[in-house]
Every structure is written in C-alpha cells, then in structure tokens.
Length: 116
Image 1 (tube, rainbow, N blue to C red):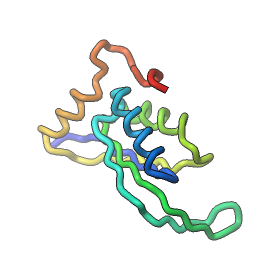
Image 2: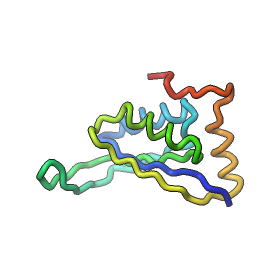
Image 3: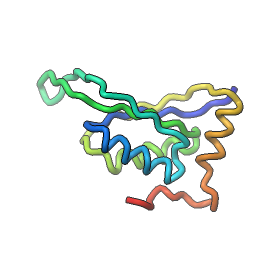
Image 4: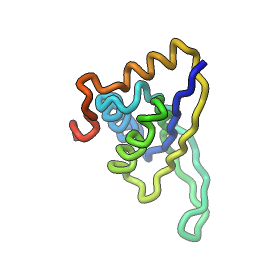
C-alpha cells in the first residue's frame, strides 16, 4: 500500500465540474477526477440557511502534487469560498504507482497554467 492524496470539491453544475476535471487531468496534477451528482447540499452562508444542488469532484493525485492541484482548482472556481477537502488515503501499490506516473510532468515542467 502507498499514500495518495484525494481532493474533494463541489461545483454548481456538471459543465463546470467537467471543465475543471479535464483541466486538472490535462495539466497532470490529477491522475483521475471522478464526478458525482447531483448532490443536495444544505449549509449556512451569509447569515442564512441555504440549499443547493451541486456536483462533487474527487481528484486523485500524489502528496507532492496536491498543493498545486488545490491551487488550480481555487484559481478557476466560481465560488468565493470553494469546498477544498484534502485527505491522504492508502492505495494499492499498483494504483498508487499509476497515479504517481500519471501526474509526473513528462518534460519536468508543470503544465498547470496551460489550457485555460
């Protein structure tokens, strides 16, 4: 078993969730992004109880690429305070190796600023 990083966030619609997921994978800061939804969120915001339908993204990356992945999500997120939950989880050796090899920038350069 080996550690990988999972990052969760939510978006107000599927299109934005898919656009973010595609950008993170293309930038090689996430090996995989799973999109769930719709999910119902109930929360307290700006003095009021709110309800929203959202789409949840779960990103898989390595501990050393996690911070950059969070930065890219935050930079283009439509929410002023996006949900950004970061966890270290244990993965099988084979899956963890796949994640690590997928997010390694092939030319040694971070491609996270391209494509948007």
